[in-house]
Amino acid sequence: MEPSRQTTVLFADITGSTRLYETAGDSRAAEEIAVCMQKLREAVEAHGGRVVKTMGDAIMALFSTPNAAAAAAARMQTDVESLPAVGNRKLGLRIGFQSGPVIQRENDVFGDTVNLAYRLHEQAVKGQVLTSDDTVSLLAPIIRGATRRLYPVPVKGKAEEVELVELLWEQNADITDVAQTVSLLRSPQARLRLVHRGQDIVRRRGSESLMLGRDQTCQLVIADHKASRQHCTIERRQDKFMLRDHSTNGTFITVESELEVMLQREEFQLRKHGWIALGQSRADTREVVEFFCE
Image (cartoon, rainbow, N blue to C red; front, side, top):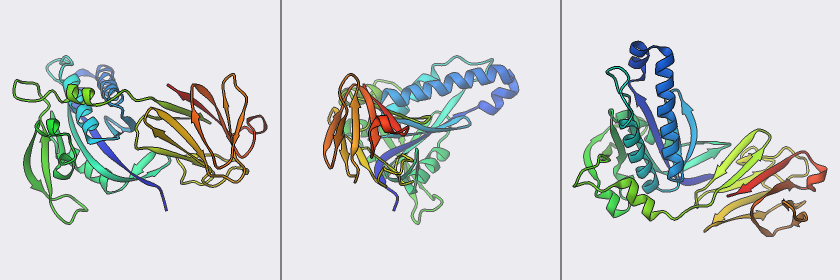
């Protein structure tokens, strides 16, 4: 069975891009859309999220909480709204987010939560952020106060209609500054970066764990015959990243400027910069994972 976890999935799609190509020309339009896409990525990272993939003029991102997704969505809309018009046209965004369980396969996620987040963003119009009644119930009260219920809609694959709720992100005297509120609620989060054979994986969220091993269901697959199928797990505990060995042959960890350590059914706090080898010493294998704790 593939591993599942709780997360919040967000889709953001640039509106007006097709028309912009027609009116501004390919080169100018591509430049403006690239600026917009960078704004989306910056908003995701500023609130502890991770961009899973881009799809044309859209992104899919994951967050540990709906609060963080709401804050990122508000920042995205504000930042894109502030961009200058090209000719007489401005780009816009439609955004949807949903919390729930997902199936993780390599660096992508799947499942009903992903599908519903996508359908929610399809329901949105330019300048709108939509979520569901279920996800709103998980928001902090101060953020929930910056939402309004709309109406139920049928959604493909769902037996019952989904109640749409809009996040009121525009700033005025009556609406909470969502992005600022969530920034105050969030404590600074450490970041773990893993590099292995062209893969570059970043982990920030406290609820995520990362499995390393030979099995194809692991988030980081290590093709070494001495590695176990599910060899070791890395998880965040407060501001620390802990590696726990589950293997037969042990996990070998080298922190830069220190001696290599072998773990057998033990835990080790990853710190600074170093390397992880599964089943044998780093000196004896090319299947080495480099880590950075920031």
